[in-house]
Image (cartoon, rainbow, N blue to C red; front, side):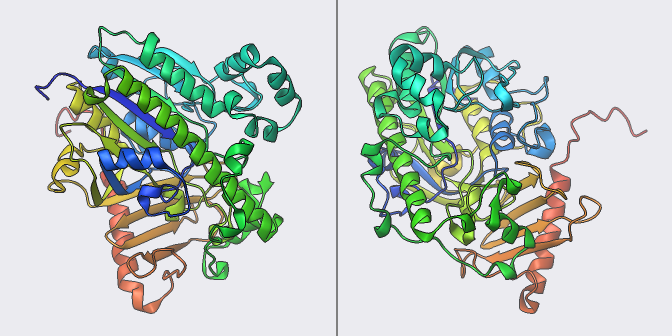
Length: 479
């Protein structure tokens, strides 16, 4: 437990931002000056993976420090168990003023359903699942209707694109920025340290941005998507290329190459809009004299295919662009500025790291690890050297269901596409040597020369699943 004064915590998360949608991560085509500055002032984790490639299971893992097969929120549209323990509750119990603005997604939100709350510890809860038409509890809609009634009426009468392309001053990302600044400047309890969770919806699809941001990018000059031979990969990817979301959304093949390039430009534009809002938030933190006493975390809940491997959106895909996300942690005076860490870390590591920094009680059943020493010195002593991600028919359901499990260790990544008795689909998989094939174009699952590596990685995956089972009930005696 730390003996230093409890730091403030500012946790900023985007939705569906792949790891390389960041200038600091080596992307020369995207404009993220504020996030790049944050990375230069903190630690950039090059290999952060999420426990699931879709929203709700991954977000529940962030809040509980547990894998989806442990916390039980295995798919979008599932409510988190009522007795789940969230790290913000522990912080509130330790004397923190906890607040949230934007998305949360620990419960079903379709058909206008308001996300149910459990003991989350948030005193301030300014919730909006997304910018679109939905729950009457959508705080963004109330703000939009009050400040821009004509734009609200226009958006409500149109489709999702009407919200995506609203002027910047009325955009959902601007609302998140405004609400964050309001909390930092006037709504927080100044007698307490704070934990503030700021959740943007962008760059989640639909793919649209205010005109001034879209105009920043020339679609034709952006790199084209990575292509690979889908006939060498599991059949579900050919299916997903034709139609996204199990047939509920257009697929890659429904678009012309020019339309795909425009989607990529719109996505970059959304990221830049968020970057500007993050800059405004960080400026407010500075203006309040809070920066030196605040841990700032920037990350995202999962990635986006964005046309790579002839697919869009997300689902049972475990490519790095779907499961690997940005992670920057800045803690002035405690973590080195401008450091980069290549070791594998997981989203489940954030909760125990923040709780330890705050001197708060540990989460019951937490499966994550405190990565402060890794961030500080680069040493990984005693930490796992693998990451796990799982998909349990978690987005729009497929028929038959699709279940995939990914494990990475060192340069090797294995993805098991489960078969009977989990589903009627055939059992198959993927195996990649990321040292030689970082874009994951060559599937070595059936390669004779990689058979030993496949067997070793399958064994490690099985052992990791056993190691992370729920054995939380105390054993009282030998029988």
